[in-house]
Image (cartoon, rainbow, N blue to C red; front, side, top):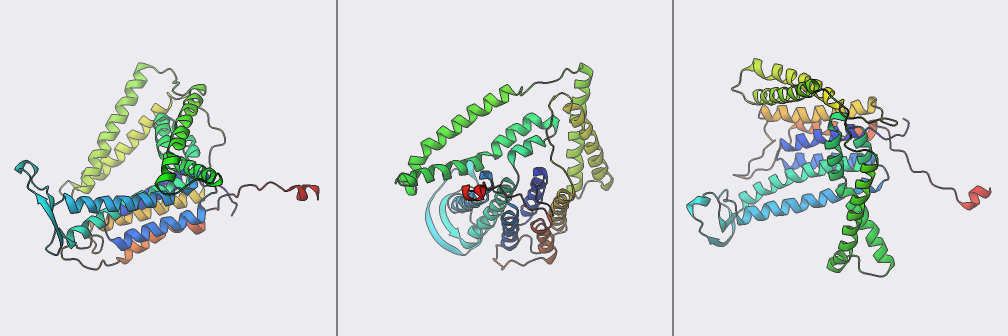
Length: 366
């Protein structure tokens, strides 16, 4: 299989499939399996680039999220269960804040529930970090539809913040280490803060100048009728999609209402996007191909996300383990298989190309 970079949109679809699966369960074993699958694929298919080292950063952010969730549960939220671990000094709040408390008893059941919920959010963040490590932000912007170009620029600038921050921190820590200065602890963080902010400001100015020089925001002339038709198609399609999704998720809604409205909304929305794309005049240089590897990633995303959605709707045991009373979480076999499907890209997608190593003087002379 020839080494090449996979389409960035395919990697994001794969990561979204894993994130959807993570959002449908609080089972720590399944969530840990999702993180392990994402980490394994990142280790196998991560290109050698500064932005490809953000997965570990998102894992650290996930640990912080879990800690914050458990702290809020201990201090503010109402306790669950009867197994008291410790009792904190409490403060009585007025009736306006019913359901909220400050201090009081901290139970094992409530802390376990907070851990499960925090782990679910941390897993979703890990999926986003995996997409950041595998997909080039610049290539993702180039592949964005014309109708979403302005939104795509904002989104790419936002998602590249973490990878660029990691690259800046590595560069500044290496420079401080070579100069014999502290690069860890409070002194190291304080010494690196100003250079990181300076680099972010300089990068923002350069980005604004580059966007202005390339005619960012330039639009083609359109008739009023075409503008009204585009707006109407987008609004009608969005409303139909919302009603269709709600009818599919609501068991009391008529069965004939959900899927037809969803299909009609998607079709009308695609027409609106096509018409809206005509207002943006831009060209693409060497567009990324969409071939078998990209379809494999899309299929993995659909299988993983849709399987967990269906299992959640059917009420499969094990997706949401009980915390009151606490039980050891079970492993639903179908959910495990659906998550393991997303590990196939580590074997069936082309490896990223290795950077060219310049020849040494001895090799050139030979």
